[in-house]
Length: 246
Ligand code: ADP
Ligand code: MG
Image 1 (cartoon, rainbow, N blue to C red):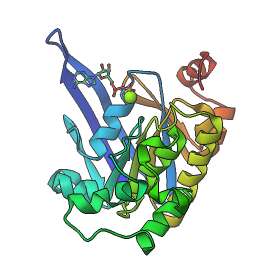
Image 2 (spheres, protein in one colour):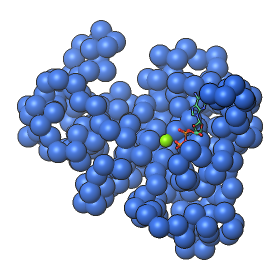
Image 3 (spheres, rainbow, N blue to C red):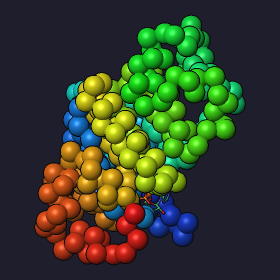
């Protein structure tokens, strides 16, 4: 489990003033559950995710990974336990198999071959046909590339998976396929997934827990489907009423 305790992030902006990016955020993301974060652009969603794999450090408060203070963990060791999937999938040059081997190459470990258990497991979780293994990764569709990013993140068996707007460039069928892959991976691998999205349809389908972030504060949280059907706070209601939510 990931736990954020009274996290605050303050950064100096271009005019030299201190800007509060995140304010007193406390939350838990449990293993085997998908925690979705929604909120307007600029509300601090990406900053929050980046804290969890230490691409950024908080100004105040602390983060715990399975009870350990993350500030005391070595960042590279931490990133083996906390994987990140980005908005735009990055494919290394070469085949899908070569992309799946990349984390092992980085760590100077023996590369898993096409028929290995690790490759088979990650392909199955990410819903990728083994026939794609020999394809040039950069020729795949956007949806397939995003699922290869997912498989590449899952092959090292992380405990936590972070995703920042992973479906914003995908059409509806590709979004649904990624959603199913995330749902199954979360349950089977007992992953704590934190997913940032502006796609409320996606959030409604797969969020176990939904959080609404606005101007660096969590203004509402609850069960995904319930919160979307019956928003309690005025702020979240206003957000839902704005057009262009898919
Ligand atoms: P979101 O992902 O919700 O769109 P971000 O986390 O990217 O929001 O950014 C939140 C706010 O913090 C924005 O107003 C952004 O301009 C500001 N911000 C992000 N990073 C920095 C930084 N390094 N220094 C100053 N301001 C930043
Ligand atoms: Mg962002």
